[in-house]
Image (tube, rainbow, N blue to C red; front, side, top):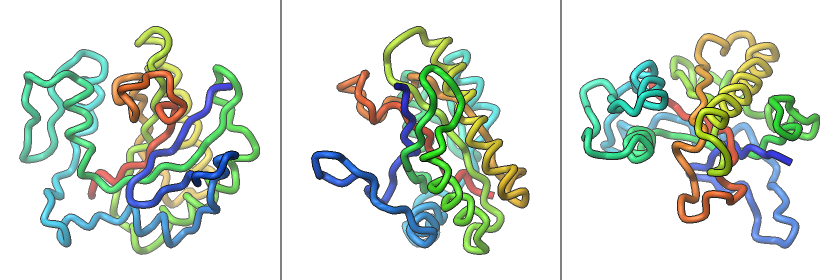
Length: 200
């Protein structure tokens, strides 16, 4: 079964027990992880250029964010990782039917919690990537398409259940271009949907 993990930032959502049961998500924890705290950390709060990001994924071009360009000598995966590394993000577990973008019912409660967090006044004004990722198995183009369909499925669910946030969510598929565990390309942690705060 193909599974997506919606990425991790400052909170760990997987416990070390044998069953690796997911801890219950809370609205407050998600808000804390997704809040753009650049002013507190001294990091750049530049808004990512989403169209440049899409071009990079498709054509191997350089990723840029407003006011900062990533070195063109880096691989597409390294460029993307650099561009997103400092952005507030969160990972939760989302289950899909095999080789499909159909969200399984057991993932709905976590998506509702995520939607409540994104609707919070604490995150008003921020836009978010709904970033789909696959593992390293299979063809690059196929994985890009599958990850795009799954990110769009999450976007559709959140937009339908929480209409006020629809225009602030940008679905984008990364395929195998940004492995969470690059030393183990087939690891399940690579199959995920990541929510990334990209600024205003």
